Length: 264
Length: 336
Image (cartoon, rainbow over all chains, first blue to last red; front, side):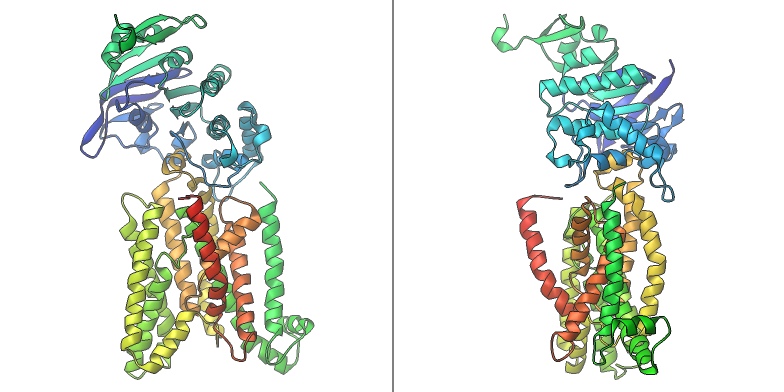
């Protein structure tokens, strides 16, 4: 499998502060990668730099071997889709219209809507199981349905690379599983490459092929979940005293925090 | 994609034609609809010809075009700023144009050349220049690595206050007669509009409407946060700057031709949006509806009372309660 997205000696920052510090990362095609780390470690910043939302202070992001900031943003948008954390839609926008916006990079002022676009929108709605909500407005949906609508928009964009910034925030556990099952299905049935920031380590271990653990703007460890999620790494990265056992369902690592109440 | 916006546009187009004919029918020499249509297509008596093509048609067309330009300008501003309060009235353009025009009226007036070229060419040009300067100033001051809607509204309110106070200052120091003329212009009026007023607006709209409609396909992808829009392949700052400048020019041209006609740019896009059932003001629908609104208001303004009132009086009377409704509503549901 080839490398699709690559960060090379990447530095990104806001003002004076350097948030991602000389970081190297390769995302292989057809994999699901979860970026984990404590709050403020730079994982969202990394994701946004990978999606050319933030400029590199130095170093570069390469998309299919080409420097991403030298490509036109439309060209990038045909290959790479992204879902920001808690995106906002205007009041009164219907789900169908929201998802239809995903076709923007494939349209131009003289060719604004085609049957290809209609087919892509229908397929995206069906894939996320919200075809029957198409005429509802986004603001009247529940949190889980809304997240599905946004993922549908990213799907309609038809990119084989997807960057998701905490796609499960604000969702209850059942809906978190729902959304991640959907991500898993995209990956399994359509071979999409997914990079997502996740807070829940156990879900990251279950749904990702590859885990990237960050601290202070650098990568501390990366690899298969079982190799990365160890007791010593959790202490090192999160300052968390935890036991790691085998997940009885999936066989992946299961992190069980100790906490002061049960400390021996 | 959906049929309702198209239906609304078609109905508005028919309505526009009907209102145009009715507007030309009514006046000191009443005409029938058949006479009007006949005359418009080259028939009719010499008297009908004169009344229609020299007196009423240019006035109706000025109203139609000015209304269309204001509706489109407001629709673009509201879509980009994502706030129903955004319009050239509030973002400084209208009052900037007012300050420019009143400068000409008072300064040229006190020099004794109030009529002639200063009035027919100088006034609209000064209005145009004032609107452009104020609009671009708001835009430049609101720029911080990009345009953010709420900041633009606040700065617009500030510039509107500055331009408004400058205008009032000019009215105070100016000659009484000039001040009277300036007040009429500041209300927004279609009185005595001839072909010389139609042509510049028509030319500007011939260029700007297609430009806006072509650029407008980006508006759909611009209605989310910046990150989502960029993710969809939109060059956010470029697209937004381009469309805002088009909207500023549209409002300035309209104001230069007829004075600041209040509330049309504010209300038209919201009415069009509710009729079309879309999340964003429909551009073409706003053009048509703006034309209908201004023509209808002018018809009311010139027939409701013994003397002809300026059209801006009618739009203000209709628009003020609407603005209050918007303010009350936006307090209840925070919407930025």
